[in-house]
Image (tube, rainbow, N blue to C red; front, top):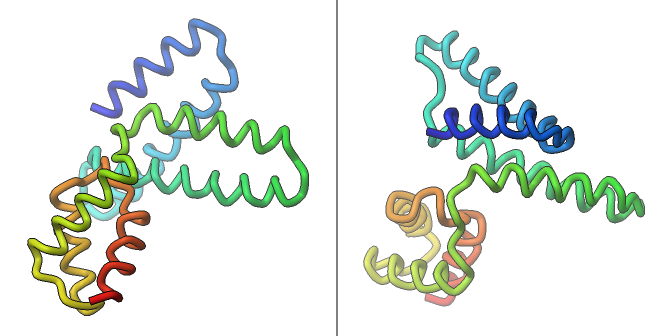
Length: 152
């Protein structure tokens, strides 16, 4: 599904002449092809949509790091470019849960898992991952779970 959306976006963006966006889309396509090639070496037929989503999230985190570095060095034009690239990448990710929704999900999952301390963190995060998958920012959820379980 993501591959088809990417292909359509590439055609449409190229036809409209939006070169900045086109470069990001081509970067995504190349990253997918690279991971497909690595999967073929391991005997698999390529990567699935979940692996593509993980790759896109990694690309967002990389841009976050670049933005921080550019802000510290005063390179505002590069910050704006990275923000634009993030917007394009986010277009392929499912909508993310809000902070309040993550808080509620963490509280409910901690209670459902009967988590009592940090030793239960892995089990709780696994439950969150399987229940909410790609729409939950797991790094944010992880921090919330840790804070909650420390208080137990």
